[in-house]
Structure formats: structure tokens, C-alpha cells
Image (cartoon, rainbow over all chains, first blue to last red; front, side, top):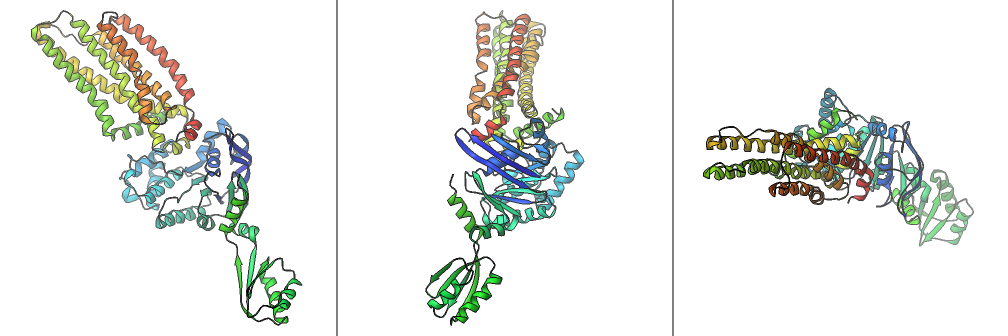
Length: 307
Length: 243
């Protein structure tokens, strides 16, 4: 649904997005993780045809980014929730939705139906005649999401959808995104929130001007650090260490009576290690398998690849 | 361009404007205030008999409503465009399948209608009150409406308002705050004030012929500025450079 090939955007000497190549499939929820200034918003703006690309190619569906005629067609099939909600605060919730429905060329009956549907779905129906300026941040965010959906877009771009929201409002927005996921909408989310990305996204791209890594949250965790088995022994001996080194273990770190071993497949490797330790006369108190988190992966990639 | 989209944009703008009391007060209040003030002036003037320079005086007052037509729309136009950026509503708007032409035309309609209607209302009140005063003061006929006032209000004032809006659009593309755009666009009243003083000094007669020539010049400026305003409205620049 979304394809980018060597997509680049420069502002003078500054390269905001450098040779971005990625593909987001129809119905997929794709998360873009990256620090401030990583180029996330610039990427979304390019994909939404709000700003031009410097070089490279990208397309949404069958339409090319950068083609003037296709730009209007792309805007018809996408919805955007920008980082600033950008609601008309002196219009009511209903008027905000209705106005955007008009701009998306929806008929009166379509607008009436979708306005009511989304306002009810997001729990804003009772407040439909209240000015958007009187809404809480969470309500405004919900309304901004509804606004991006009034024309039933194929692709939804969301830039930091839960930034500055309290935990309850964040959860409500996340739950709504998960509902949209069930409807097989293609969703592209920019976020700082690793936990949110992990919970919502099918795949995640880590961007720091360049795309550092892309994969499912589990793939990213594994690809960076792999998994570790932590073995707590009653007493550490050289014989135990020697017995483990004879196995296929990659890296062993010894701290006191504790061994931390890098493993690829702990379900297969751990029994062999335990047998070797017991055979070498060791007594095992606990065995724990740990994984590196998405946060570890993110921090490592971002720190190692400062542009 | 879809013909009805600019009207829908204009309708939304008018709705927003109608809820901004300061803009309403300024747009509607000022022409009414001027109408009332100058009606009082006319009443006081004829207290000592009908002056011989009534033609020049009355036309000059009508011309003030033309000057008002250059001042009032710039406030709305500047708010309408720069306000979108200031209130962060521009990005979602530009993400819709709406063209620059539709957005600019919609905002221009919204900037045009309230001030021109207010100017006409103010001028109509002034003309009606003046007619009443002058007729009963001994003039013996109704001075207004006349061709001069017709050309000023129905041709020159709308063209002047369009000029002001176009300058506001260009200024809005270059500055990032409403006040700045408004101040630049507000400068458009200067040539019209110069003509006013030229009239007062007897250097310019508010005759139908002169007013039509002046209107033609303003119309040419309108056409040039229309293309210039369209060319200067660069959505990308507005999104990336305005902070």
C-alpha cells in the first residue's frame, strides 16, 4: 500500500530523510520510531503530498508521490492526524467533522451518517454541539482521529497520536487504533512511545534520518541483542566454565556465582548447558531466560547511528 | 476546481468569523459608526442652510466607504490564512483533496462579503439619513442615490476590497503572524486615501468618468495581484518555514 524507494528530503544542507526504502502492506499497522528530528514528520508529510521529495520514489496505492495529478488522488485515499490536532476551536465537534466531510466531497447523507457514527464510536456524541476549544486533550485527539476517518480512507497517517495525553486518554486512543486494525485499515504511526509501538504495530521501522532497522517488534528485539540465559549456581568452578565452553555457546559472562550466556534458541540450548554444568559437578539454583527489549534495540540503534 | 467547495470553505470561514466578536465589532461597527457620525455632520452643516459645496462633501463621505472597503477585508483575510497556521489547522486542511485555488477563493469570498456588505449598509444608512435631512432642510430633491455613489459603492468599493484581500493573501504567505499580515495589507488604503485628499484639494473630481477610470486601474491591479497571490501561496513553504 505504501512503498518508498530511496526517498530523500533535504532542507538546504540538512538532510531530514536519507534514502528511505520501505514497504507497508495493505491492512498493516506500521510504526515509525525515532528521536526528535529523525525525519518522521517529514516522511509523513512527503507521503501525504504536503511537501515535495528531493529525490527517490514513493507511492501510495497506485499513485506516485511527486506527481501533481496523483497528489489529489492520494489525498482522497489518505487520512492524516497531525502531531498538533489542528481543530477549529470555535466550531463545534459536529461542525469540525462536517466541514472535513465536505472537503472530502462527501454527500450530505454520507456526512450525516459518518459524523454520527464516529462521534458515537468515540464517545463524543453527547458533546457534538460543544465547541472543540472546550474539549480536553484526549477528546480533541479523538475528534482529530474521527476527522481523519470521515471519508473512510484506505491509509491513515498518525503523527504522535498519544503525545501529551494522560494514560487514560492514551489507552482510549490506542484501543481505537486497535479497533481500526481489525477493520484492516493501513495505518502508519509516528511515535516516540516504544510500548505503544510494541502493542499496536505489526512492524516497526527505526528512523534516525536513515532507516536503521525494520521488522516486527520481536524481530527487532532478537536482531539486536538476541536472548540470554542467566544461570545462578551454588558455587562457581573452572570445570563448569570449561564444560560450557565445549558447547556451542557464544558468549559467557561470569559475575560471582552467576553466568549469563548468549543464546539463540534457549529451548534447545538450555538443557544441554544444564546437563554440562551438572556433569561438571555444579549445582544450579535458578535458570532464567531474558530477552533484550525493544527499548534496548531502539537505544542501541539510535546511539550507534547518530547522523 | 470544484465550484461549490470554495463556497463551503467560505461558509466555514464566515461561521468562525461570526464567533470572533472583535472582528464582528470592527467589521460591522466601524461602517455604522462612520454612517452615524457623518449623518450628524450633515445635520450640523445644513443647520445654517444648504452649503454650495454639497456635491463634493457628500461624495467624499461616500468615498470614505470605499476606503473602508480596503481596510476591513484585510483583517479577515489575514486572520483567515495566517490564523490557520497559528491555530495549527492548516496541515490537516492541506492534507485534504482541496486545491490551493479552492482554499484561496473560499477564504477570499469570506473576507469579501462581510466588509462589503457592512460598507454598503453603512453607506445606505448615511445616504438615507442624509436624504431625509437634506430634503427636509430645503434641498427639495433626494440627493442620493446618484451615479457617482453608484459607481463608488457598486464598482470601486468591491474592486478595492478585492485588491486588499489579494495583498493580504500575498502578505500572509510571507509573514507568520496575523498582525504582520494585517499591517502590510492595511497599507493598501494609502492610494485610496491619496485620492480622497486629492478630491478634497480639488485635484480629483469624483465624477462618473474619473471614478470609472480609477476603477479600471484598480481592476487591472486586481488581475495582476490575483496571479501573484496564487503564485506566492506555496503550501510547502508555509508548512515548513512558518513556526
